[in-house]
Image (tube, rainbow, N blue to C red; front, side, top):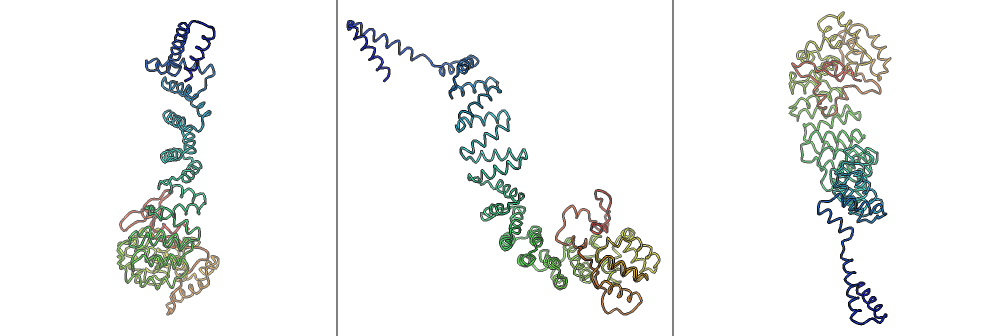
Length: 513
């Protein structure tokens, strides 16, 4: 339309000079031909394209560089120039032009896409991460979020990863693995409320499949003082299943949060009488200081239990000893088989039986304890020497015992042996120095009467140390780790080494107070 207007103006100007009509027409036609010919000449874009098509990329680059030097900063020129630099391997110049494009057009999605591809190709991860962030600020993309999070995780930039996870979540990103990652990072930072919100939503959709993820939700709910919700969800996870290890870990978490009532309720609800989970009820009773209730429960539990594995037998024996019931512990050991027990459990049982004067049962246990254990254990060695009529040997062994390191049962055995070797006064002073609970003197007096052959109507009591848990009680709660189990030694096996020195089955769990 503009061309026709110009031709009309030219015709009008020619007519104004009063030329003959045929000359005017010829002049107009000639001017039109010149104008159309000029318009049909290729512009810079076309010339660059033709040069590239003919394989003359360097000449095309030169054309664009001249235009750039003359001040041309149009988007088309910059895009062509950047592409040619990249094609010719001049990556530094290509990056420079790309930066110029991003600065002039920061919200152009095509430029951001080109920049992301270039930085990824050249492995410029810092620039690539920044470009991915810019793309996500402009428009949400699930693939963009996944790529960005993967890069941040690879470089262990936790703070940046957390910020990116929160940004992506706000935009609608819901990939389960990354949402679990976000929840765990928030929990680690102390933001339990937001962490629990994410985990609740995932659990409501049945997306919490792994025990560790469910355990994280339970911990956050307990930390937020919402034990009933933790109980409700745990009941759904565990009811009808046989996930013993996970069930015990949830119960342990509740006990750690001082929610013993709810932990006992959960254990009763998901267990079968006599199984590993129902045994946790007694352990929880002991944790909250109810040894009599635990003792009664354990006597009923053993009647219904098959006691068919060493872990269960070990837990039962230790729980009975903590409940001050070595007789029931011995019954469980015999039901399982003394010869199948680990040496550490046999030693604990022998200590308790010796401390309470159950000589026949002590002899049964002693028969399956390896001889070297007695040599390495001066307390049991003293008990055996006294039994064999060698009081001087017993005194010598007792003098090597570090009383401060003894737990409750071993302290009771030590007091009994000291009284039987005529050193009741020394024992009483040592107990007073240790600040043991009232009744320790009574235990020594009973042991002394027993040593003199008098009739003892009351069984020697367990001497309890104040404000201190015995090592045995720390081993009591629930299945031990594979590393700990590997360090324990079964019948006929050699003592397992531990980094930093060697340890006997007796030493394990006794000298780590």
